Amino acid sequence: MGIVLKESYKNTVTLLIAILVGAINTLFLYVYFLDTEYYGLVTFLLSTAFILKPLMALGVNYSVVKFFSSFTNKEEIDKFLSSALWFPLLLVIPLGVICAFFYDAISESLSKENPLVKNYTYLIFLVALATAYFEIFYAWARVQLKSVFGNILKELFVRLAATVLLFAVYFKWINSHQFVLCLTAAYFLQMFIMMWFALKLYRPHFSFGVPSNFKEIVKYSLYIILAGSAATILLDIDKFMIPQKEAIEQVAFYAVAVYIGTVIEIPGRAMSQIVQPLTAKAINEKNDDEVLGLYRKTAITLLLASGLIFVLVNANLASIYAFLPQKYTGGFWVVLMISTAKLYHMFLGNNGAIISNSKHYKVLLPYGLGMAVSVIFLNNWLIDFMGINGAALATLIVVLIFNTIKLWYVKSKFNIQPTTIKTWIALFSIFLLTYIGVMFNFKFHPIINILIESILLGVIYLFVVIHFQLSTDITAVYHQIKLKLKKYFFLG
Image (cartoon, rainbow, N blue to C red):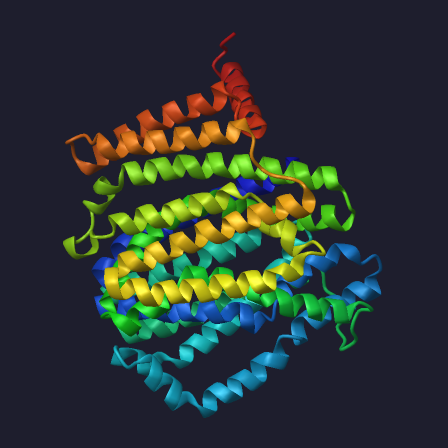
């Protein structure tokens, strides 16, 4: 786990900075600098593009991670990486032609409830293309075990670009229309920088030749599309469907609440970038002990790290909302449901990587279809009854059901599970401290409230983690820090 902790630590620092920048953007700059309609528009366009992204990439980013470590000679590696670049074009080009030919019909359909969408529909395709190829080049770097630079680009670059552009709107250097166009351009710049870095790490001899197992790679890629699509649909279908039923401003209100709730997954997003290729390598080498070790360590480490954020976010939610305009503050239940869904997802550790990189990856086809159909059906039904709360509830229900199925499947096929007695101690502590934090609020200024509650709950939480040694990795890091502090302050 050494390289995992090292890379994950760097990625976590990047993510924390990105989350801070994103929080400033989402909770303040977008809210105060951009018209609510345009905030909703940007959320809708990006969410729809992210739904299309796995399809545009044709699963190639997953295939790069799974198959790269199985090649042993440069010629095969070069053919493999070359095919990773041209294979998605087999779909992108005809899809682009079809979208151009039927553009009016598509834009009319998407803008029935909100006419503002019509003039920007083409940006969905462009952002989907840029982000799809970014993911391919990012996977290219990750298999070299160089995930940090790509993670900075993925998590921080566009957020910083948005910050600059939002200030440009505030100072009237650009208008809201130009903001949307410039933000789209930022995604293309992000892709080109990632391409430069990936080719700097490893530049193959480009050709249209294919590796010897190309048929297997294509088969895997096409199967895995649904897995990637299902995960993206789960994240973004609600923001796509809300404007079809509600005013587009509701997407902006929902986006703020979802952003707060998804902060829970910071540790998982950091760790997955390095754990996925290591899981693929362990499976390719048939190293069952390594697979089990990664599974259990990632599960408990992610549960504990995400659990701390879960406690602090939900306990301080009233104070956080005190900084926002009144119309944005109705998302308490959205935050609670989304954060619970994210916490359960973190509880699975590298479960998804084990399935997708094993011979059992084909199960992801019915799994992905079931998840996609379920979340669309539930959103369509619950949004009508409960508005944005219904969208959050749909996500929570689908995550609880389908993640439980994934836990059962890995247990039945690999005879491994991530849970121990420490898992239940951690879960009990997380929900108990969250309940205490929600029920007991100080009556000071929101900033003072956040500081006091965070310190008190954080200290208690860390005491439980260290006292019961719930994670060997976290305990080891604690003792290292303690030793360094003793040396620094000449204590004992």
